[in-house]
Image (cartoon, rainbow, N blue to C red; front, side, top):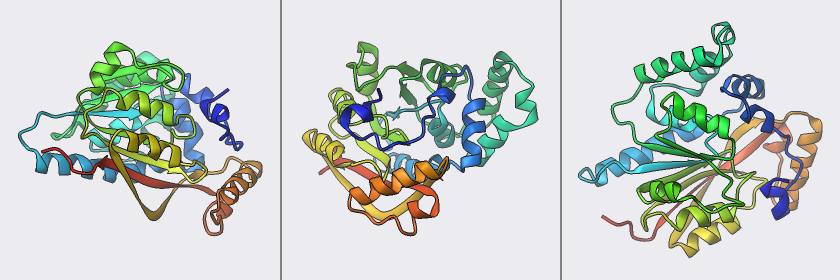
Length: 277
């Protein structure tokens, strides 16, 4: 049973767990490309802007760590720290050249691919995900500086993860809030600095209130905007019907959004009332 099911938030979202348990990302991108999965594309400029703002406001501070929850194969790290777009990644992993390679050959190619596109302002990224193969691949090809295969809904942070989080200035998550909730954030924030920020994209089917409550308990104030971002197409009519029903039950209008065939997500930013200098 997923964490969402345990919390009573299992509204019938299609299962993609099989693509996270592969030795490399090709199945992940091949499965999601026809569904026009695009939320990392919307997150890319947001996360870069936060990194640039931090560098401007505190140029003398050491480069802190970004902790990416539900990081899978390191997609957010790839887009944050490299001169790449999500479309580039789809092309890179779904083309015939990639299909002809073994996992070891693909990993060698990826190390060169990402190293050649590394940005001068790249920041350290720690990845957390329940899928050991996904995080291992992202670490192996250089997207993650450290990787932890752990489900923080059911287990506390290990000592190494706790130490990694101590240097975090930003916690990110895109697409993962169907699987994690308040327990994960509580366990991460227990070890994070007081001035850490949280930048999350949550589907409208997710009630972000309980998460915001935990963040508030840790001294972080959450803000959002009315703008909605398309996340992906529905896998079938049944998933769309279930999602429309879920959105309606939460008091929102699916007209023009989920009713048109896409999941939609909202961006939430949380930070201290008075950021530390």
